[in-house]
Image 1 (tube, rainbow, N blue to C red):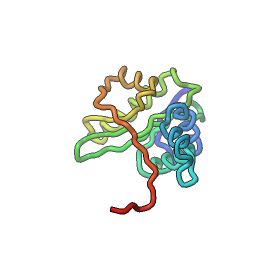
Image 2: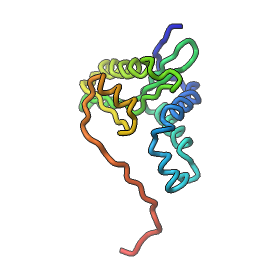
Image 3: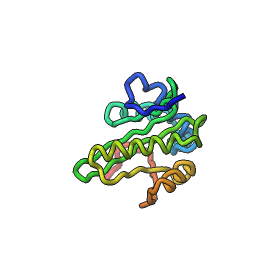
Length: 161
């Protein structure tokens, strides 16, 4: 069956969320937040991912990879025209098709989109533990620029100064 890459539409949201949860469920640091602090404002890590994908659908360009009528994965991002920089926010591939080149096709499609928007560079972030993604990015010529730590704290009532 032929594969196509197309722009996401609002009707894709449920499948985008499903692919995100399946793809990142084992590596997301948001699960650690839930273990330590519990759901945030009543929203567990899955709900927070859903909100993130909803926001991306409203504010970013999302390209989806389909085979037949099945959405296999997606990539989303933005371009900062002032500095000519594209940023990939999420690249998610259904685990059932990982290792078949879907991530590479989506990554290259986003790069092509950024080039069409006059971006000269692209950035993205991945967790250190995400070996699959980091291996792909290295093979595709990305260079590691930095590692950062996600710090998290529960805010308490206002303190005396």
